[in-house]
Amino acid sequence: QVQLVESGGGLVQAGGSLRLSCAASGSIHRVNYMGWYRQAPGNQRESVARILSGGSTNYADSVKGRFTISRDNANNTVYLQMNSLKPDDTAVYYCNARLIPWGQYWDSDYWGQGTQVTVSS
Image (cartoon, rainbow, N blue to C red; front, top):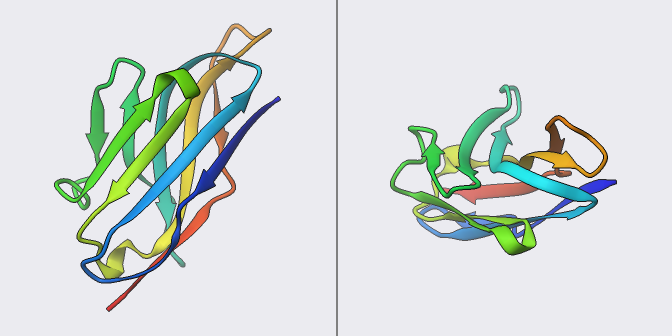
């Protein structure tokens, strides 16, 4: 069984910073990529950032230059450093991992439970 556990959300003023963490645990054979999505009330879930196993990254245009994704491959952990936060960044942030569990020959998507990020103006 695979589990993703997030931490680090909270309330911050505009211009402030937060760091999200997400650790994948369980019977994991290989992690292909990990990333973060977010969903604000009334909006669809959107991709924020993604990091592949080799280290390449991609970001949503709205967060480029402000957010940085990084990864600890040894511990299957991904981080999202969020700087210069804006009220528009307010959302529930979800960790995502595309991985292959032991005993399976294809990769599947796994999700964390979500963590609230609120940016006040």
